[in-house]
Length: 424
Figure 1 (cartoon, rainbow, N blue to C red):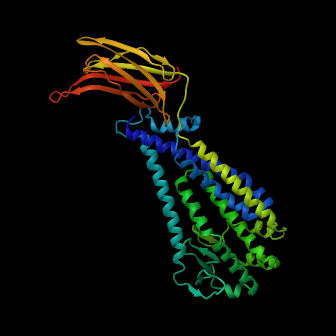
Figure 2 (tube, one colour):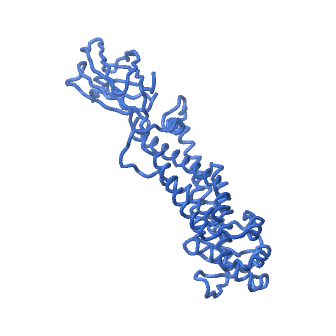
Figure 3 (cartoon, rainbow, N blue to C red):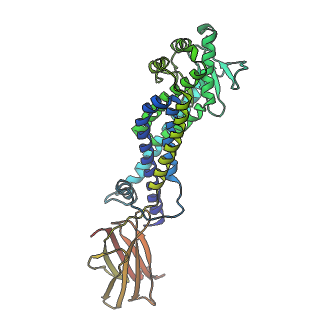
């Protein structure tokens, strides 16, 4: 395996570990979000969405010690398929299926990023003629749009703006206006613009994963419920006015990737139903914070442990040899079955070539490879040599010991082609 193929295998292994970590994290959140909302409140339930990115990050952290561990069979099978060539993988045109898959993924990534940027730009373009409004009670700029279909919304992450519709003063009474400003201010205070940005940054490279798109919609769903819960903790006596403000607010005409806007995706029926429920006590919310920290630590630990550099262990290795001298036709030697670290003696003769001898052993190595260690002497060698190489199971590996004639270009020496496999 050359350096480029080894690097491809390493990236494939990391990519699949990140994908599995993300999938597991989303499935855990899917199972816990509704019970968590019932037990600890909507705000704590929303914070469960920290688990998928945390699991992905933990799966990519470097390890100080590469302790031997078994690579999960699914990860090993997939990464081996990505790193090792298939018969006919490159046809007469030289096209490699791995290159095609990489280009397809890259095209999807760029397309999703382009759609996100275009949607954000289209929404912000409608704010070019918006009028700034003085709001002493908020530390974020407030803009009044030029039409009634834009806003209420929080737009952006690092330079957040609160946007109100053109008929804000006419559509809502004074109490409803204060509650809407409190709602959008809660979005800004909670950093929901950054949450939206992080969510889209994770979905873009995972555009092919259906669960990623479900997670994005579910996160925006839980985001609104959590914001409502935060507002009601401060304005719990004005639930009816809050419900009226929801019903008077129109759905957003345009998508807003980075920000929080009212749209058909938001759970209006569920949000209004939540207004009738008894609020979660502060003690239960604090208990939920403790449970969340413990659970996040456990999830990160599991993802980190699963990403230990893999050493594929086996009680037997198979090795097939072909040997040729000075460019002559290869001699096929018998197949060997060896224990890890067990040396086997090899030797051979060829016409006009002195006898050669040596020994060979196989060891488990990182990234799913097998390390082959050999000791060679005789033949056309001036002195004993001890080549070491790593190869993927089933992947032919070549050791050439000798020189290439500068005039004729012919090879003078021993050429060994070895194919190692796990199990006999």
